[in-house]
Amino acid sequence: MSVDRFRALVKEDFDAVNACIIDNIQSQVGLIDDLSSHIVQSGGKRLRPLIVLLTSHASNYQGKDHITLATMIEFFHTATLLHDDVVDESTLRRGRETANEIWGSKASILVGDYLLSQSMRMLVSANNRQILELIVDTVNQISCGEVKQLANRHNVSLSIEDYFDVIRSKTALLFAASAKIGAFLGNLGQEAADSLYAYGLHLGNAFQIIDDTLDYCSDAKTMGKNVGDDLADGKLTLPLMHALQEGTAEQQQIIKISLQQEGGLKNLDKILEVIEDTNAIEISRNYAAHEVERALSHLQVLPDSIYKHALAELAQFALERNH
Image (cartoon, rainbow, N blue to C red):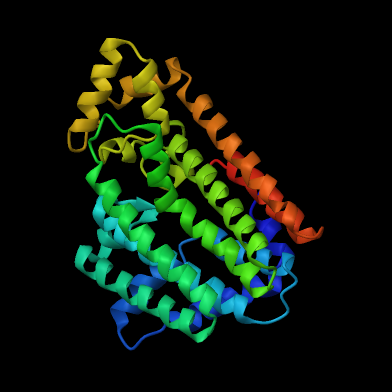
């Protein structure tokens, strides 16, 4: 299953979002244009703006603000990617060198700030108080979540509740906000808006869980980032959490030592064996499948349409993707 089929359903709007991105990424500073274009045009799926478009159509919205708001979401997401790559010292994203690898951390942080300011400018231009409050609250929670994740690096005692709290802030909240924007634009009412928010939240959880499994069962060419990045960063994600719980005493010790060291990839091959021995990937995928089921249950508030069906299929896509 490819994301292209979902884009085709809203092709005119999706093309308009791409045009809006190009129009609003321009500045009077060459470095801003070069760096921001590098990451914005690096082949991302643009799932979050796609969710804005699909939920807007599913809510029977007839205006044009969904184009501006979908672009706003993509700019904010891109800003967080630039900042994340600096914090994580990542060298590869979407199969290309990261901006911080090419231009350095200082430039990446500052251009991330520029994209954040552009997203806020577009948010204000939509002149929708409900959506303004939603996004401001989302930005605040995501920022707190990123700090919490940083504080939990090398923490081998992270609980499953802590893990879900991290991925909620890291990924799911922006999916949820993207879905709720469509409901607000279509004036579906608070109950429907809350249901679409829950859809996005569980979809985002599933998306991040699968992303965490790919860190241990894919390759750099397919995934677009280095295998074992999470381990190198000292992040205890769901597959490794299960391996740590179910492995032998010797295997547990190898995982703990690797997590507690900076760049602990020395034992990556052994850890991959533990993950396979404990069936950690399949167990993690079962968690993701449960999140997809919960996401689908919240689509019942929408009237039947091709866009509603696309949102359901998008949840399945999150589960089946390999990059």
